[in-house]
Length: 106
Picture 1 (cartoon, helix red, strand yellow):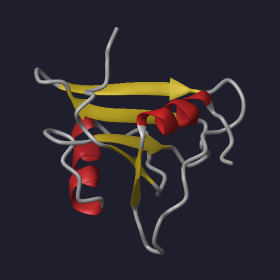
Picture 2 (cartoon, one colour):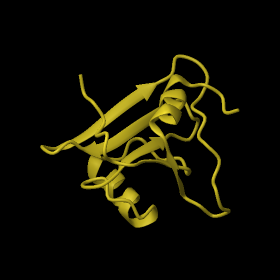
Picture 3 (cartoon, one colour):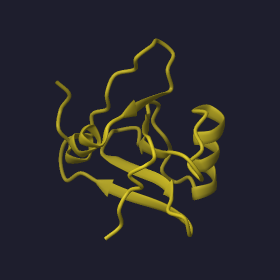
Picture 4 (cartoon, helix red, strand yellow):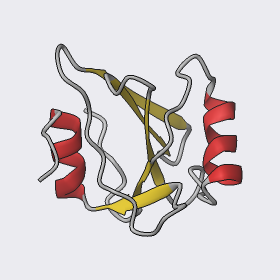
């Protein structure tokens, strides 16, 4: 079982990402567009354009990890941006569990 690093903050990218992109491109998006360091200090959640797939990106100490999930039906629902123009939002582990379950926002 792969566990997410409990000491790292979780962030959700608010803009959809092309999932044909490689590990390196996702790291660059996290760093350059979101200001996050997925190699050392953050876990980053990406959603595809139609919201049916997500990827979690982080470094586990020995290498990069991408967890990929595709919903059978429905779509992933991200928390709303805190400020207009935000490109990512910090989420708590309990919120991540709801997002990964495909639960609608309340």
